[in-house]
Length: 190
Image (cartoon, rainbow, N blue to C red; front, side):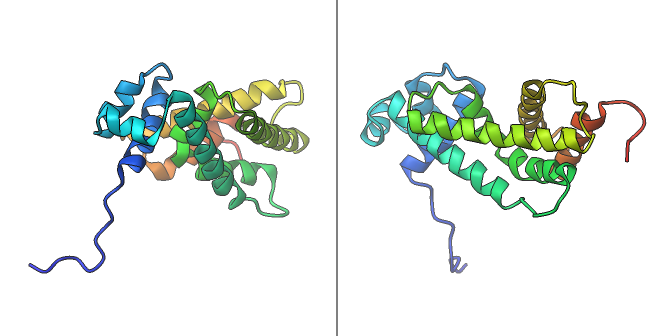
């Protein structure tokens, strides 16, 4: 048997720690540093060689999550597209990153730059909600903060359902958009 020409590179210990920490802390923000090491498949000494403490790792994770979600959403922005289409595109881009999005929502990040970037993301979602209201897709009397909170929850719920295999990834964005804009009634709106 011949070896593969381009074998997939094995993730580094640092990559394993980052991935494990995001997955673990997005579900359980109180998980310990030892639990991160266990989930990453590394010892505590290895974890501490890469990250001095929890705050250092949290800050890096937040920067990574913000960059990934910003990049995903930026790729969906289409000039002249309706707010409904932009909402659908945002769901399509961010649901696969639901663990990252949830991490940002749940993490206690003390870094001012990261906190400001996350607030900026929420402001962009609020601006999208404003456009949805202008188009009549969302009732004007519903508080924008409520709609933003529902978008957050739909991203997390859709990602969680896809990750567990209960819904197909291809259906997640449509279901999230439908739930936000039309509820769960029998009739599908235009």
